Length: 223
Image (cartoon, rainbow, N blue to C red; front, side, top):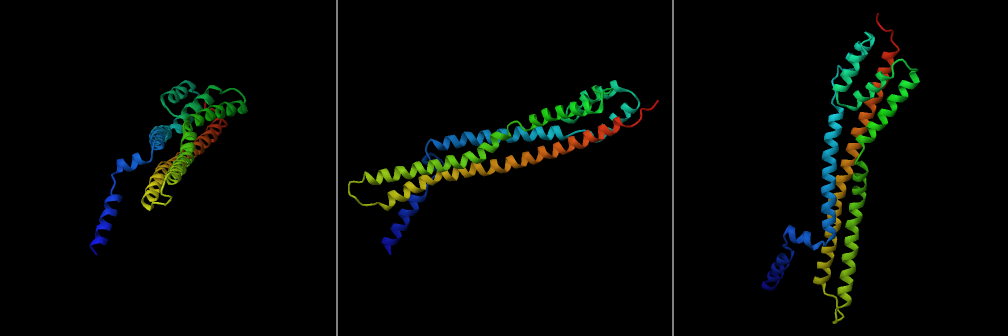
């Protein structure tokens, strides 16, 4: 019984390891994952704030634009767009500047601005997608490298036997990088999909606003 107790105590002491020691056991690839995690957090926060700001627009914006256009007060409509810092306002401003030209030209000008604005909103999202797929692969690479090192150590054993402690220690060290890769990759995956959904929602609003603006232009101007 005493021997069994001593053995359990030794195993517990062996398994007791600090987070820092666990992190360092993963090798230099863990620092790569830390760098990717930092990039992921920065991109998500920056894009989230940017998209949220772009989505905020006065609900009476289009009503005021309609009133200005129907009254023939084009200068006030342009001024309102310039004072409203949003992709929708910049779209409508370009359309107002094209008033008097064929409707197809106005719509094309609005769509061109919309494409530019959407591209700005999507800036950085490919990096999130790359991190969500690349981080687990880097973690798996660390696992493979660690397992190779385990077999190298085993082959270097002059006794010809396999030490279970050496094997298990090498295996858990190798798995640390896989865990690290998943910890970085999974949040990056969800963050990317969340931001893509927010951008798609913004695109839908831009399309709806474009339709509303074109309908305004088809209304008769008040004298």
